[in-house]
Image 1 (cartoon, rainbow, N blue to C red):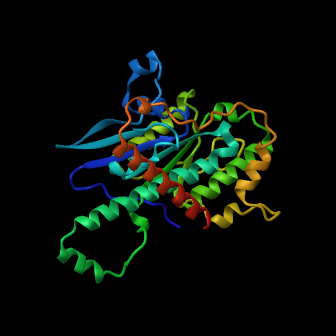
Image 2: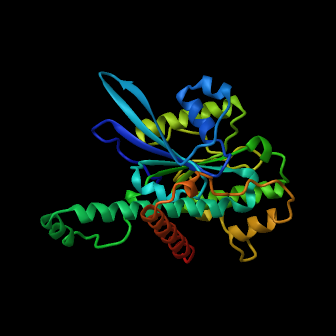
Length: 303
């Protein structure tokens, strides 16, 4: 199984989207990648809705531009994804929210799928009759084209805290995340935003993803006592296996972390003061998108 990669467009532009659970370190990592030391020193503010920035790299006489969007609000604002183009998706998770990480991953993946499907529908509706006729002769009649999904890279963060979890908890969580990443052709790289060497590795990875759409050569590591580093395509599902008692990995994670009396950051809806500026047309569309996302999540769980 090979990992998902993309070819950089001839225009020399890439489109990258950062998303993840609340307080997972998205802005901290992005600031480090962009070299914004002044913003790190002054403190990181929560991302509100969808924020944009860019990175630029000189390559000979040409320049490569990476358009970067950061989605705030955890899983609550995934309905905003269709408005942006996404070649590479960076999903960040808090390892200390062990019991919910797989559920969050499912939600982010479903949001990306829904965004791709909506963009495809919009593109199809704008095609002229000749293009529609040509599409009828295509061997791909319908359904989601897997290659149209963005390259996925998962950064579970707070490894500096997760190292203090019980060994069995770390083992179950790491195998569950490896299984999910392998199943969805994603790369999995544990990270601590408080560790310089970890941030340096992440910056190297982001530099390659944001400007090339591929990962650099990395050392494979799946020892749960160490930070996990598993690139897409580096292992098979059979290498990871399933729990021996017939349970799913989600059930095993729930069982392992269900007894833990830890402080978990809940996925609360970010207060954007929408209630102060009610607009029936916009609110109804937003409600419709939320319902579409919930329906997509239910359909995704069936498989």
